[in-house]
Length: 120
Image (cartoon, rainbow, N blue to C red):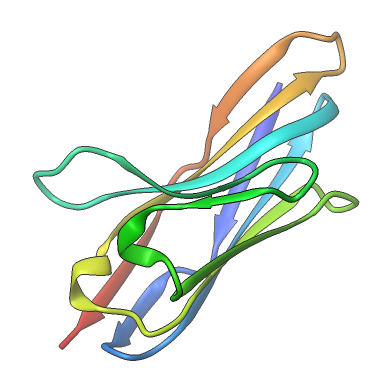
């Protein structure tokens, strides 16, 4: 079973920066894709950014040029550096990890979510 711990959320003013982290632990053989999603009040959860094990990245249009996703495979950790934050970035941010477990089962696990609030 894969366990995720997120950290780094908080409240900032528009134009500020935050860095989110998500560390995976548990019965992991290999972590494949990692990603960040967000859900604002009254809206559906949406993809923010994703990164493959090899480092290929994908970003949602609203965050391109402002957010950077990265990972440290040795630490089983994914990061999201968020710069030039806007009030519309306010949401609960969730990480998602797709992994091969220690018993070679493919699992997808969500983090508990971390609140990001951007004030104008």
